[in-house]
Length: 105
Image (tube, rainbow, N blue to C red; front, side, top):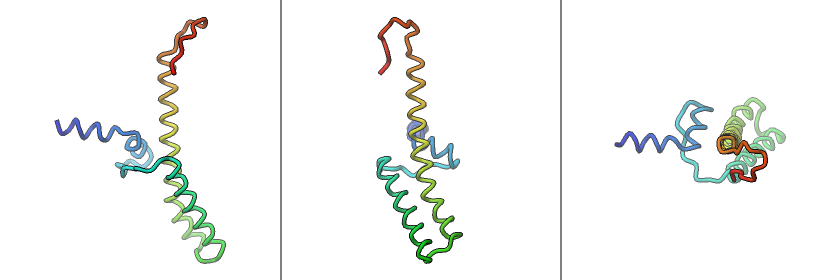
């Protein structure tokens, strides 16, 4: 039964999107989407400021920016998966009768 518990643990939205994007198991994120995006924005702006001030070369900045872009990818992938799932559920439960007011919410 340990396998079943491990399977459900890995069936988390963040784990699935991480596997699709990076082919690896994700580190559990306790932060909200907003917090994660704000973190990526801060990393990006700090790096761009250092390049502008001449404290970092463009090639170094490119390497550093990958971390920030990974955060954006993860967040928007998860949001996209949620939106896609909701659309699928609405399509599955859609009442084909155009006169019906029965809609899935």
